[in-house]
Length: 360
Image 1 (tube, one colour):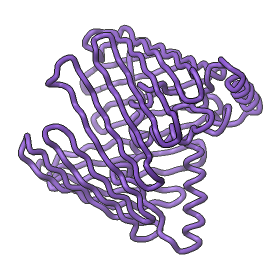
Image 2 (cartoon, helix red, strand yellow):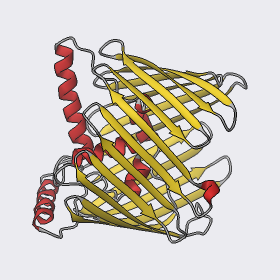
Image 3 (cartoon, one colour):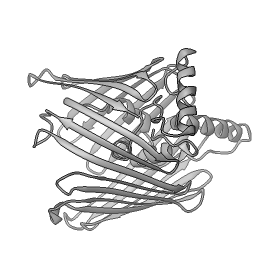
Image 4 (cartoon, helix red, strand yellow):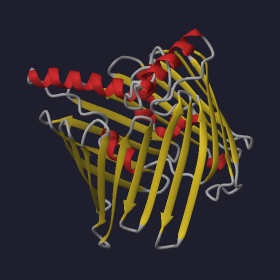
């Protein structure tokens, strides 16, 4: 998650809501990494991270529990209390129902060389620099991005990233109350036709979550997710795209307990999908998904695994199309990590490898 000493939970929430790519452009610090020691607080955090490393604690317990861990532990405590009281818990957002599966099955795959430098300028302001060289995934072969994140309070966060061509990606996140959140997401390009702006609102009740989105097109959607029991949630989403003249409806069911998470989705596109996540223990997670087009009878399956070792995080996936991908983050010291990535497409005879370093 994104590092922030006083309110790391907010940054973790941002990553869960806005996605890892947003976290990356905002100055991402990998699980277990500590900030660059630029002041007394950072130096103390770095010392704590070093102590945790010497004690052999799992990665992510470096200067403090990671934001994701804080959120998971808090959610688990609240869910246990509500379950004991016979109260149905909030099921989370409709589009985040399979978030654990998405995390495992979408490793950060890249090729060439990447260098990332993250700096905590203050408790509420971070900056990042990312250099990506020798890549076949980029049209130009290389890129540079400067990112900044401003979080003046627990309720507000501004995230931005810009490259030399003038491409600007920006996000505004505002928690008006524990139940109500609004977001504005924009991608502004020198070519106005490629610019996109989207706004969404999310309301979290005691046992349901409702949301709505709107973007240029015009495009609009509404969704609703309701807990039926402590372990089962049902919901749906409807979307309308005026520019392309279509309307579609999606229905979703989710089952979850302490170790398992399963979802089933069907849409009026005549497509169905199922996903499953298994938490083997605190360090190992397994995931799989299956998608089928009922009109053409075409299908696809992906499976993956995630290992959280003492100083490393390993992710790998395998698809029914013969594609294998893997990503390794290895923390050598607090604030310094090595990155390795691989992508193999056996059906097309393609392969890509990447390596990088991350400071801060």
